[in-house]
Image (cartoon, rainbow, N blue to C red; front, side, top):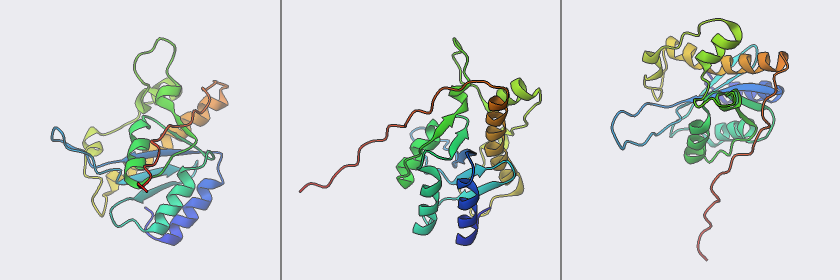
Length: 193
């Protein structure tokens, strides 16, 4: 868990030194029809050795936001994850972060004619012959809490780490992935003159 600016800068430096990193976000779930998510509340990154978890709230300092933008906005390193469409949209809506270099494995690993996206559990079973334990109970916990419990922390770290491991495996076996496409964000609204 990143809890200081010094830790955030060290995480930034470690992440920017990589060609590819695991990436995901978690948001407090919504249960009422029409309720709008206030997430993301947690941003997860992973290298081959470490996971870095950044809590996001209304108190997120400008310096921390600048560090997150330095990691997320450039085309490099590649940000690898599963089901990143909503994550990217929420990051833009909440923090005006324009993510670059995104590879959504749920789409990139979809085989011709396959209608559904490939999830992390299916990818782990397909490429590693193992079962990825993902607790639905943990996934719907309150990610906006100021102090996450150990199960939440491990769940979040695993989400980022497994995406990177699948990506590295796919590359190692010579499987081709589609090229990274830039994400289209809404144009900024300029104030009237």
